[in-house]
Image (cartoon, rainbow, N blue to C red; front, side, top):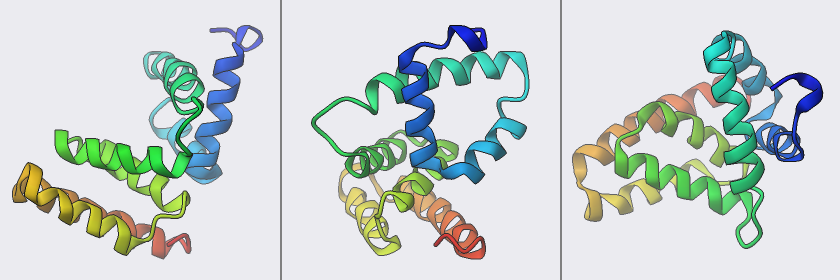
Length: 135
């Protein structure tokens, strides 16, 4: 998609992404993830379809949507995505304790091994956020 062809959903998605991730993370991902044509196409699609259309739907706030992502990532074993969504959840106001409790609650439904991995991911993410002064 050329810069002058960006849809309203893409523009809205980019703004929601910045709200969820923060400027630092968006810029870091632009340099390290979306810096080649293949991943740039993926990023454009995610901005338009996921952030621009899905995250902007009425009915749930961004805070609730972020927690849903944490839960779904944990249940499906998507550890790199979990790290991203934990950061989003913290930016939306969930505390470390609340997120830890949500993860522990999942152990009765999806099992301890997945929750253990999620907790290890959370431990790293929370430490990084605190070190950056964002935790």
